[in-house]
Length: 378
Image (cartoon, rainbow, N blue to C red; front, side):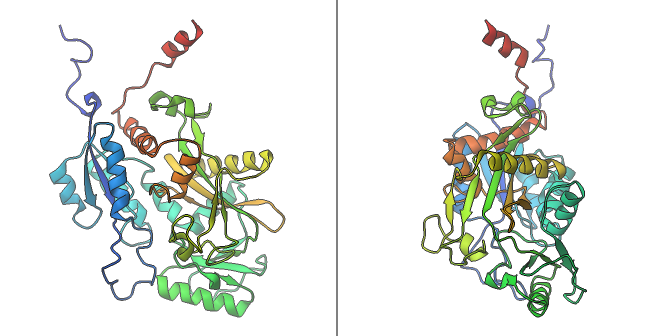
């Protein structure tokens, strides 16, 4: 007679080690940019060294890995490689919801993958839509307006100085010292530049002059059932990393977390200061973490995210944007800096993202919490 385990059909669930495909878009600084793209196009693509680090972390736990470029040949490569699961950090190749391209393809092919699903990745890249959702659910955001042409009447609740950036980009793209505007002439000039250069709307919002923070999260309501480190998680299933403060005082672009500033290595001259854990009052820390969880949940983000929050002129936190595909470059990306500040190894961070994702697809057996609690009470 077959045992319960033997009775199950062969599936990913029964495998201890998986073939993991790392999906990403790679930055090649030696290649000329195509005509008609912005000067900072592809700034959010990853270097191959990041892919190598992720693969090494996965292989340290016994998994087989392969790197697949997230380009137009991705469907064919997935067919040939037949991965058990994909660790997705692909940014996409254009369009107004490019970060949702790879998750949508994986859903179509029924291939398990990590991180947020299609809709959350699509919405989070659209900063205006994200702010509308948050505002309508009473999260504090700065007053804002989207410009499709740059000629729209300026809303009366927008007070100068204002901040202008592309509505559907990340990694500080389209952001430099000219993003801060002080009168209507400047706001229209900058909006026209964004619309014409990035071929998308310009997001105009009240400039926030206060301190800037980013809050990383892991988990979901049932994370403890599947995590290799259940002690990391609080009762609601989330692990809140130490808050990272971004100090722009000595940055190459003071007051502005620009793409130029982000591209510099930690500690390099002209780079922002990265302070983690941030030196803040307990009440502010509690509020920032609460806002990050709410921002994550309202977009239905999954397993991992990082939310940027800045203080207004009165010291009140305003939620700016969320990254549902946070960077994973060791010793550089914000989430990795937060993880390291807490003493969490890079390998454990990557594997946690993998196993949280795999558990959604029935690839990880839930632990018996009742049995564990019984053992602890003895």
